[in-house]
Amino acid sequence: MRVSANGINVSYQLAGKGRPLTLIHGMGDNLDAWWNQASAFAKHYQVLTYDVRGHGDTEIPPGDLSVKLWAQDLHGLLQALNIKETALLGYSMGGAIALEFTLAHPQMVSALILSNSGGFAPRSPEAVREGDTRRQAQLAEVRRDGMEAVIRQRIPDLFSPGFAEAHPDVMERYRQVLRRNKAESFVRVMARPPEPPRPPETLKSIRCPVFVILGRLDKFSSSEEAARAAPQVFNNAQVQVMETAHPSAIEQPDLYNRLVLNFLAKAGAH
Image (cartoon, rainbow, N blue to C red; front, side, top):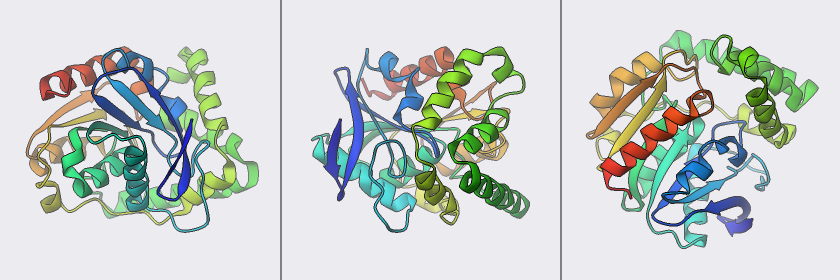
């Protein structure tokens, strides 16, 4: 389905009944990345998944991209769907969007889940430089070979050692997710300047329950730093470190879903 929100047509899906739960995918993914979560969560909630601007079937007109703009898109989408309050689950880049939205519209967020997203934890200068070098190399490949380059890069980089070889069916499903994106749009998303973590003092204003999910083998989200930082920067944070790499929701979906549902039940978002 598509709806006009914040001046663009946004692709989205709604499933289930009950209190709203909005899932925000990561960079280079789209709403199909939640194939293990959407139907499971829809047994308990009204689940909203959508394609972030620059991904899937959502429009991406000319102009700069930013976490702030993506949060404004989400606000427009919720308004268009007459959703006045929701729990938010943001994965990776989606966690940064969820965090930005929560700071801008705290009254609309009943609970916040940051999954494999280190946007609140400090990063060393070396990590920043390494990330930028890797990003520039990946951009060159994507410009040359399109989304197939993304698939080549992501399978070994994102997942735990041996996971891809042991789960070829899961890898094929994930390849199909990636192929639904357009290479030229992904280049624009990836080429935007990196945004620094939120200053800790701004995060203290968040009053809703917060759940931070991390992967012990995650190369992208500064898991150790994030695990240490979360209880210090959030007033009401629960932290869970899973035995996964970056895509915890794909590697261990049953445990992931159980953790999320248990947190939401305890948070009163049911």
